[in-house]
Amino acid sequence: MPEISRFLGIVIYMYFREHNPPHFHVEYNEFKASLNIESLGVVDGKLPPKVLSLAVEWAGMHQAELMENWDALHSTGKYHRIEPLV
Image: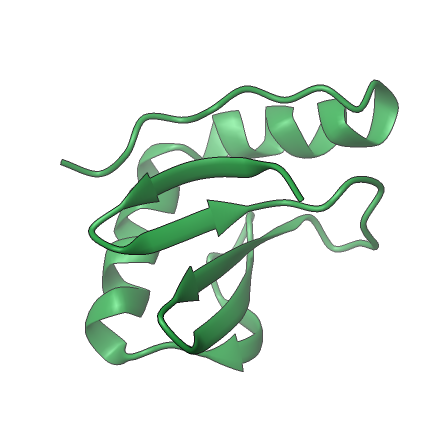
C-alpha cells in the first residue's frame, strides 16, 4: 500500500490494482475512509469533518496527479509522492 502523501497526521495512500471507481484512502488516527478521485466524495468509511475537509482540499489541488498515480499503479506498479498540504 504505497503512501502517496502525509500531512497534519493525515496519511494518503493507494493500493496496487484496486477496483474502480478510481479512489484513494485516507487514514487519521483510528479513522479510515476512501474518497473518489473525480467527485471527491466519500466512497466508504468515516473521517472527522475537519480531516475530511482537509483531505478534500488537498485532493482538489492534486486530482490530476492522483489520477496519474491511479493509472500508473494499475499499469506499471509505479507511483510518485504528492506534495502535502501546507
